[in-house]
Amino acid sequence: MSTKVLGANLFSSLNIEKETKRLNQLYKIMTESKLDIIPTPRECVWKKNKTTLWYHPAKVKKHAVPIFLVYSLLNKVYILDIGEGNSVVGGLTERGYDVYLLDWGSPGLEDSNITLDNYILDYLEKGIKRALRHSGAKEISLAGYCLGGTVAAIVASITDLPIKNLTLAAVPIDFSIGIVPDKWLEGLQKGDLSFDQFADAHETIPSEFLYLMFRMLSPVYGSPKINLITRAHDEEYVEKWRRMDKWTKDTASFAGAAFKQMFNDLYKDNKLLKGELVIGGKRIDLKNITCPLFVFSCSRDTLVLEQQSLPVMDLVSSEDKTYEVYDGGHVSLALTGVFAEIWDKWLLTRSIEQQKGLV
Image (tube, rainbow, N blue to C red; front, top):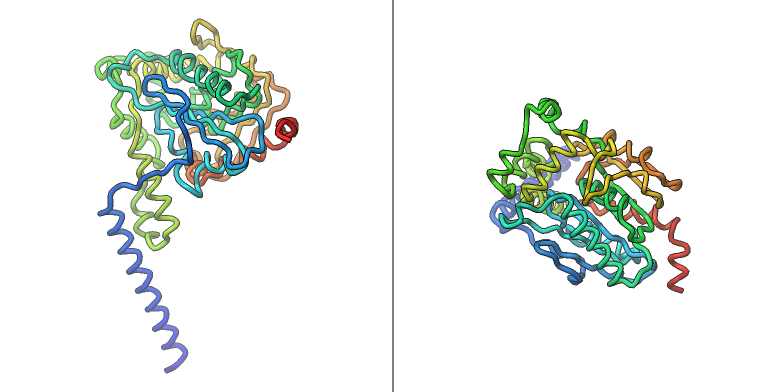
C-alpha cells in the first residue's frame, strides 16, 4: 500500500471518529436534562426575602480581608460560580480568600414595590454588614460585576462601612450610550418612550421577557447552536457551552418599581453620571469614594461598552486607582473563571498588611 493511500485511509478514519463523536455529543446534549451546577462549598449566613448571602470559606486562608461579590440584579448569580475549574468564587477560595456572594434571588409578584433604594440599602448594605459581622474582619473588599458594579459603586459612595478596596468589572456608569438601541435611548430621553405602563401592568417583570430582551440586544444570549454543531467533538467546549446555555436561559424576574427606576433614573436621565441620583434620601456623589479602586473592561464586550465604564475613573477621589482592558467578552471571563485571576493579581499588591495579620 502506497504512503498516499495509507495517509488517505488514516485521514478518513480520523474524520469518521471525529464525526461520530460530534454527532453522539449533539444527541446527548439534545436529549439529556439540563446540566446541574454544583456550587463551591458554601453556607448560608443571612437571608432577607428572596435574597441569600452565601459564605464560601478559603481552602487555606491567606488573606485577612474577605471579598464580597455583587452581581447584576437582572441575571442569576451562579455565573460567578459556574462549576469546578471555571468558577470565579472557586478560584478566589483557592487563592486563599474568604468569599461572600450576594444572591439577589428572583422576586415574585408580592415584591413588585421593591425599589433600587431597597436593593442597595436594605439588601446590599445590610448584606455587607452581615459579612463583616460573620467574618470578624475589620474591613472588606467589595467587587461588583456588570450592574452589580453600578450598585456596588453607589453603596461605596454613601456607606459608613469599612470598604478596604473596590473593584468594578464591566460596569455601566454612563447610561447615555450602550447596547440599548439608539431609538430606544432617544425615545426615553425625549419622554416619547416609557416602560412605566409595562411595569405597572406586570407588577414584577417576568424572567421570560428579560431573557427575550437580552437575546434581542446581544448575541451573547443567543447561545448559538451553530458553534456547538461544529465543535461538538471538543468535550471541554461542550461542557462550557452547556453551562452557558443553561445560565442564559435561566434569567431572573425583576421588581417592577426597580425596573421603572432603572430606566427612568439611569437610562432616561443618566442621573448617576450627572451626580443627580438620590438613594435613601442621599444624593449619590461618586467623589465620596476614596478607597483603592480597580476597574476593568472586556475588549469584546457587547453588553457594557468600555465608554460606559471609563467615566468612573474621573468621578472618584481615590488616589490609588487602576483601569485595564482584558481580551474577552462580557460573560466569557466569568464563565472561564479568569475574573478570579484578574482580581487576585490586583488585590495581592494591596494585601501585605492583610497577610501579616494571619501570621
